[in-house]
Amino acid sequence: MKKWIDISQALTNDIAVWPGDTPFSYVVNWPMEQSGSVNVGKITMSTHTGTHVDAPFHFDNNGKKVLDLDINVYIGKARVIDVSMFEQVGIKELENYQLGGVSRLLLKLSPNASDSEFPRYIPYIEEAAASYLCAKGVQLIGVDVPSVDPVESKELVAHHALFAHGIHILENLVLHHVKEGEYELIALPLALQDADGSPVRAVLREIEGEKSDDR
Ligand SMILES: Nc1ccccc1C(=O)C[C@H](N)C(=O)O
Ligand SMILES: [Zn+2]
Ligand SMILES: [Zn+2]
Image 1 (cartoon, helix red, strand yellow):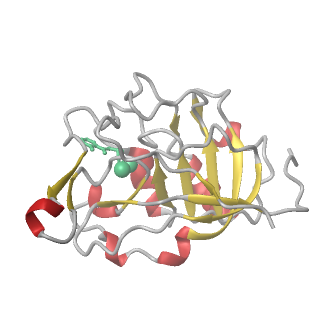
Image 2 (cartoon, protein in one colour):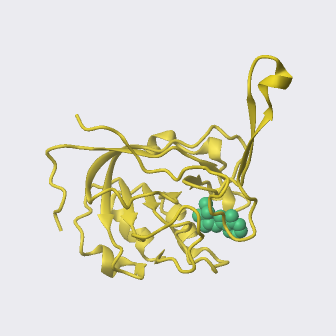
């Protein structure tokens, strides 16, 4: 069996955050010299830093919180496709792929995404893609950029449309070392009761013997 590979951004003190959002920081807040026995750290971060899931409460005051999310969505078979040749991903672009029966879809949108620099421009998902993907059976969409909507968007139409169609959102994946194909995915959010989002450790394992390029 193939090995699990990491598709998460490393949470370092210089990781890129959404413009204006809380910088990430990890410090040893209670060092061994003071506690007498152990180092104890303290993390300060936005819930949307690094590889993370969005809960609907992020963009809807009445939306589900992280602890209400179905964990089954974040574990299981996933398809990785390369859509980095497109500036936005809508039905026309998705029609180039065979997505029937795909329940988790990870999109390679940005081949040169960097963990330490917030992108100036990001490709985005079109609103109409939501119903198209829902009809294919997709429950989770993952992207290697900080948002499924354009950075300057206030309406967040793709976020709303995706969740309205039962499609959960995973952002800031690292996929440049991953080729198109069939994988198993684990990307569990923390059990954060009231939260609008949660960091995840996202990992993939290739499923051998499945055709990877069936475009
Ligand atoms: N942190 C922010 C601060 C202000 C405005 C948007 C964001 C976001 O995080 C949006 C992005 N779509 C996200 O879910 O990560
Ligand atoms: Zn987010
Ligand atoms: Zn988002």
